[in-house]
Structure formats: C-alpha cells, structure tokens
Picture 1 (cartoon, rainbow, N blue to C red):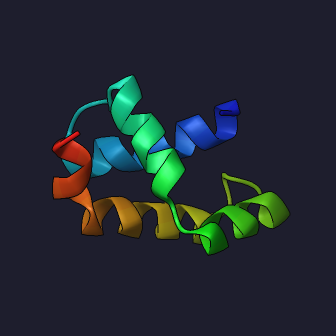
Picture 2 (cartoon, one colour):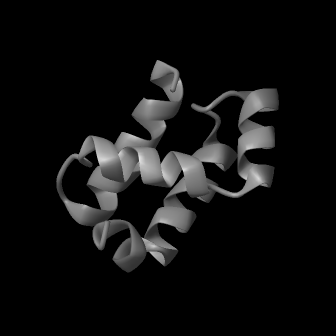
Length: 69
C-alpha cells in the first residue's frame, strides 16, 4: 500500500473512530473499498477531496464491520 493511500485511510479512520487504525483494520479497509473509489484515486490521487469523501463515507458506513476484525 502506498503512503498516500495509507494516509487517506488513516486520516478518515481517526476522524470517525478517534484513534489510529491497527494494521489489520487498515488492510481490511484497503481490500474492501469499492473498485470505483480505487479507480478514481488512481486518476486523481488519494489526497483528492472527492476520493477522501468516498473513503470517509465507506469507513463510516462500515464502521462496525471494520471494528469487528
């Protein structure tokens, strides 16, 4: 996982959960993010605002699933 992707996941997770994600949580999020979000990130970069909003929304909508890992 490249640093920009890891940073985006980390920042969104911290905003939602209030702590940094464990490596297994970060890897789970990375593996399960929608393909469309990943494609948009490839085109615009992981630090793009729209990409960040989609990552944030996915983590928020799937918080319980992520935290159960």
